[in-house]
Figure 1 (cartoon, rainbow, N blue to C red):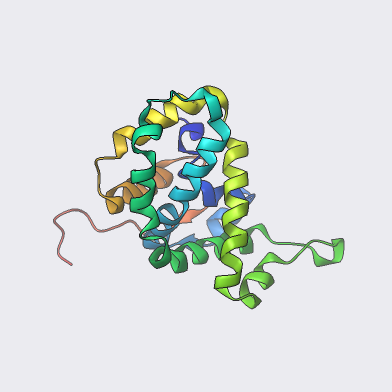
Figure 2 (figure 1 turned 60 degrees about the vertical axis):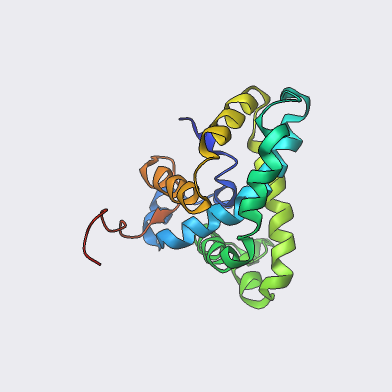
Length: 186
């Protein structure tokens, strides 16, 4: 599975420019990554449609079922926003800024701007960044991957994406301690 295939699911990670050393300094809770995936999916659907335009078939999965799948995630966006915001804050902190060089201190912005005010800005930025990451030649693969994932519950899709991010050598953020094994006592 290529990083390009995961681009829509990894929308929040497009913001990260941290080096591997910086990524090892802090970690995100698996549940927060799940929330980030849940939160980002409807935005990723919009970005995919914008980036793929006429590349996708008129009767393909996204045309037939894309809105329904996106709606399942959209229903959970409000509940997922706090976890997604924690991931965004961690990414911004890891990236850092140099106010002396005229760079905006986004960590300070996140800490001072009310989350409900920050959210539309984050949404617009994520849509744009994901759309820029998608290559037209990958559109059909992305659509096929979404179709394969679509029968799963939202929680399983987000969990699977979190798992794939954790396995990825290209992840820009470290995920904290692994989840308990299936069947393990809680």
